[in-house]
Structures are given as C-alpha cells and as structure tokens.
Length: 406
Ligand code: ACO
Image (spheres, helix red, strand yellow):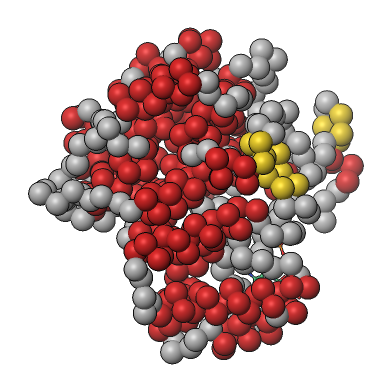
C-alpha cells in the first residue's frame, strides 16, 4: 500500500492519476471529442461534413493551419506535397538495407527520424528556427511518409521502387507506389481511392491519445518535428494503440480456421470465457463511433467496385456486425463496431498486408502529430513535460559486497 504521506513532495502535493485518464496535459485548439454524444470535430468542423465535402489533403491543411485553405493556399500546399513526394537515393538505400522481413513500423520510425538527418535545415532542434521552415517540414513529413511506407512494402516483397507520379492525387499516388509493376501501372477505381482517402481523413487527429501525447512530450524538450513524429510512430506501434485494426483480421482468420461462422466465438465472448470481439467498443465513444458510420458506407462501395464475392472472412465479419447491432449483450453495453473494424476490412480488400495496417494509421495521423507539435513549438510559455511519480521502492539501504550476496 502507498503511504499517503509520501504523496507530498518538496514542491507540494502530487496528483496521482495513473495513465493520465483525468489529467489535462495541455490546452489545444485542434480536435474536439464528446465520447458520450459520439461527436468528433477538427478545428470546429464536424467530421461528417469533412468526410462528405473535403478530402485528406485539404483536411490535413485544416488540421495543421486551423483554417480551410483558400484556393491559392490549397495549390501551394499541393505543390509542396508533390515536390516532396520522391525520396533521395541515400534514403532509398537506407530503407533497402533493412532485413527483408523487417517490420514496416520499425522501418517507418527509423526513416521518419532519418529525415532530420537528410534535411538538417528543417530539424535544428531550435523551435524558433524550425518554425521558420515549418511549411516545408510539414510537407516533407506528410508526403514522404507515404513514399517511405510504400517503398518498405516493395522491399519486403523484393520489388523495385516506383517513382511517384506528380500528376496523381495523394491516395492514387500511394496505390501506384505500392502496386504498380513494370509495364502494368496500377490504376485504382474511384471508390477504392475514396475509401483510402476517407480512412486517412478519419484518422487525421484524435486529440491527446498515447502517440500524440508522446509527440507533444518529445516536442516539449525542444526536439524537432521529425524526431517528435518518429516517437509518435513508436507509440502507435504498441498493440494497445495502433494494433486493433490488424487484430480484427487476425480474429476473423482464427474464427474461420476454427470452422466457426462466428456463433461460437460470440457466445464465448458473452460468457466472458473467450476473447473479446476485436473492433467493437471504444474507451471514449460510448455512442456509435462517428468515424465508423462514415467509413462503413465507403467500405461497402469499395467492395462493390472491387467485385469481391465469396470471401469467408467477410461473411464472418458481417455476421459479427449483425449480432452486435441487435444482441442485448452488446446493445446494453454500447459495444458498437468501431472505426478499426471497418478500416481493417477496407485495407484487406485493397490488398494492403496486415503488417502494414499500423503504418496506414501513421500516414493518416501525420497531420495531427504535426499540428500538435506546432502547438508546443509556438507556445512561448512552453515548459518541458516532466511528470512526477510516487516512489514505492525500498527506502535507504547499504551496499552489499558480491561475496556477501548469498
Ligand atoms: N467484446 C465483448 N465484450 C466486451 C468488449 C468486446 N469488444 N468490449 C467490452 N466488453 C464488455 C466487457 O467484458 C464488460 O462487460 P461486463 O460489464 O459484463 O464486465 C463491458 O463490456 C465493459 O467493458 P470495459 O472493458 O469496461 O470497457 P472499456 O470502455 O474500458 O473498453 C475497449 C473499451 C478497451 C475498447 C474494449 O471495448 C475492447 O477491448 N474492445 C476490443 C478491442 C478494440 O476494438 N480496440 C480498439 C478500440 S478503438 C481505438 O483504439 C482506435
């Protein structure tokens, strides 16, 4: 048991809030969430309106700059992204020198950090300097994260680099970088590009989650944008954070391998004897996850356009969805399908391998991390983040020489 008298430090009382569930770590103008009501807004704009009228690139601008871009700003932003899509030869070799079976998140984190080495004028570790080059640094991060991710996939599969197409949109270019082959350029259907666009837009920010708080914490020490977002990638790699969409596919595969259609799995989950349904429930949204509603419609459109039929995993997924939406166990606990349920299914349908799912999440989250880094860098009163602890180890004791340690 913790001795309550020790919660007092030399500077006063310490608040003990493990996991920071009730601690506001910053003031932020970027994202508003009301989990009870199922509301998500970027810079005040409802996610539903952005999903209907905007796209990932415009929303990235909004998240980063605080306003929807005027036509000239939109053009400048698109030009910066296009100019920064390629990666230098040294960086290509850097990615190619990882083992063929390297996890794409390990490569992504190392590569995002390495951008600071390739672009030292954007990564001086002096916030005032770095802010002077902020627009370029943001474009480098947003555009190159996509090229790095796609090239990692190519290397893992023993395939050559595809050069980005300056005339392609952000998502079309990503699909080309991933899937084009010599003499066989990948041209995505509008529905698939749109599903990917929505997936990225819906992940653009989600206020002070684990990876974003990590970005802010690293930034608070004065670190540059690339070092900070690279730390965010590492936090996202943790299975409790960025891994749920992959867990959905693994669960469906397991149900299928067990010869079940989902009935036994659901019964065991309800009994508390089996695993939980991955992709259902949310810590913050106790109403329908607003992102799930949006992505669900786009998922079905993408499926139609890909003409995917007779997919046993999809049949199981639809069964789970159907049961969860009507069964009293799930309804009474407000366990609705969350964004990860559909995004895992979308990525699988597009042909993105499961070990790339968290990388896709990182591409989508890049604008949020950049905007949150800037909030720290621009704050003249910024303090280094330095939580305290409640020490529970031994009190003072004397050193024991080796010969006396039985
Ligand atoms: N399947 C079956 N039962 C569940 C599930 C689930 N997915 N989630 C919660 N429950 C049950 C619990 O067993 C508990 O039942 P009880 O009241 O009879 O004991 C009740 O619902 C409440 O569960 P808690 O764990 O208290 O709910 P909490 O809000 O803390 O958990 C969480 C949220 C962690 C997301 C949980 O729903 C879960 O584990 N879901 C599956 C994993 C998942 O999809 N995670 C991704 C979330 S989205 C994201 O991170 C981007």
